[in-house]
Length: 405
Image 1 (cartoon, helix red, strand yellow):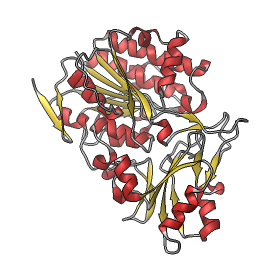
Image 2: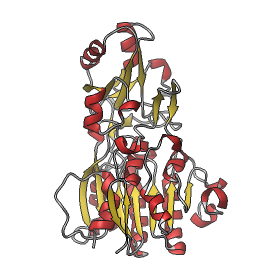
Image 3: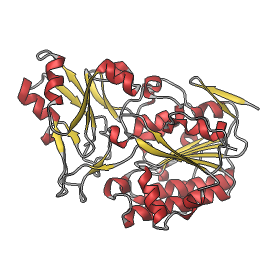
Image 4: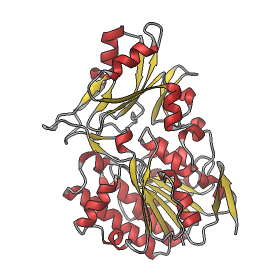
């Protein structure tokens, strides 16, 4: 049987189409509650015929690090993408981590395509397209810019007709549905060997598990997953991270404005707080997440800054760079002097003046910390000889290609 080696791991050639789905912001309870409500009959029917695991995602539990971990089969220490946003020390600038030049490892997708496999990648937000499609010879496009696809740039044309949907708003459940509608149509028409589908967490940022809106969204996923299954695909779905409420009992956001605290304690310009959740789509989370990294400039010692942060209510963990990178498998030269993780109900901001919360029309829900690390890892085939180990969301291709019958 033909095998492909990528980033120190070996993957068998697919015997039928493999579809790996990354459901953005999907903690296991979204699935549990939807099944209990009768909204997800296909998922419910997997009990006894499929594989159901609970896995750990990468910390920081943000979109870019985890999607790239899934498609490389490796942690950020290998592929280099440690946030949606970071401080580029070489350029002395805060930048988005959307550019493929920041990627340090090849993807499973590109490796299989180079070996002759037909590969399709569809992502909800365009911010991921260039990273997921790096050096990929195949079809790769985003739902966000489905009206702009070209054969030269994306390997396909007329995606709107393919999906049978109008171009969706980036802030909508329909953006994720478009990914599935186009993916199902491509599976049925093109019969690719490997397909990767990545959604958006717009719904999960607004609605808790078990709410009617959350169950309706999971029900939509369920219908499309059933369609992929019916078309003969091996389906593996996981998530890039979970999601939690970040509020007090009255629904008010619990925010530690860390840059304000450090400026007051040590003076302006002595520290730089970086929020790796930052991306172009801040309406639903206000660039507030449960993970930050801090650079300490001339002035206070790193230990003094660490102690000040650790004493703040709502802060769970403050680690020195080396310890944080060892624990969370991060690239040391892309992380600040300190890594800060907040408690489950708290988020970290920089300065109050830098966050616009006017777009929040529901109590704040977000992610980024250890409390959002547990995610589903579910497949529509059994795995009778599954090894007992710590499963990660970036084991999705390993599970789908190497362990399922």
